[in-house]
Image (tube, rainbow, N blue to C red; front, side, top):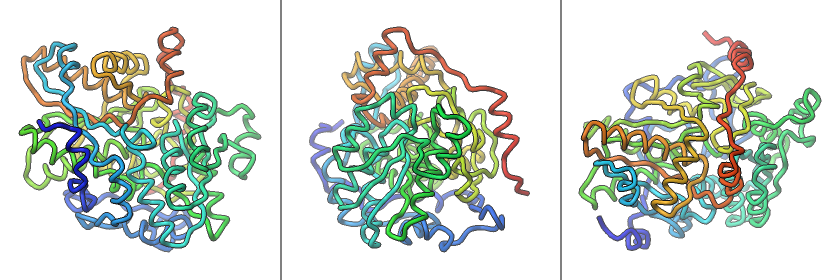
Length: 453
């Protein structure tokens, strides 16, 4: 294949449009509902939280949506991101499979998240917004929105899940370096946060709670909007630059994946690598297996119920049909904080229901073992979230070895683990365990799902 450095520097290869999979799905996804009327929401219902340009992307069924020039100009700092053949990893696994990875850790924030944060900040700035609020789990999204805010002159307030706020101080430092304010969630700054703390003062937090706090603050000020780092259609749309670039890079390499893997928490990284390939498949092209890899301690696709649910704990958001563990579910504090969300993106969930993708849940210790093996082979230390994909890659590569098949495997390495080294330190010290959720708590959360016929 071509020299990846040359490819990175060739800015003409940055996609000019994002890809919208809704245009190619055999059936449209179920509508998003107003929690009061249980009727499909309209653009006006979302206007307090998002600028109209993003709302129109959210409800669009157009196949291609043009990427604004100012957004592409910033993408040029790291896009196109490299596609690498992991030859030393193949040798370490003694597999006939060919393993490729699309490396998103080359962005300034160290992950795939700026693909959407830059776009969201641009559209908000264009709409006259002064301030953005958001949530973050491991801190990848928070640091990426902080970066985007600094580029476009926007104030950014970030509610960071408390367990990650304590685990990852350097993520907080990065957000503050970019000029954002980072608050541990649940906090005393919002009614929803205070209500949670009144019930449990030492609550570790969850993405659902942090979303509630960020949405509550955004709804109270006319100059403030809310930005979400995953789950929503427009966020998944922005991430498709990953897969679009990968398709062209495979053309240059003269190869094509048989299996595509991506870690999945809310679904943005997974959709980014998978949806362009899936769309090509739906239009009559090759049909690779596509697998969303999630944590065994928060398994929304493989263990959750496909039902209408709130996207946040305080029930301030519309109802979305998705694979969910229940909006009140609090996952244990495993280190892949970006994957600790109770639900899966509406479009990813719909694709799973249609049988277009598969789900796979993997435990924490196996993920870190896989990440260490990958780092010692390829030299890149993956983020804990990305380790889930690496773990699944090993399973697929060993399957190919057992079956004598020289399949081509592609995975998205969504970010580096340079801010997550405490997790690796804990792993080497034997302090990490395979955490599991409370079955009774899950049952209660699922029992509390909204009643929607």
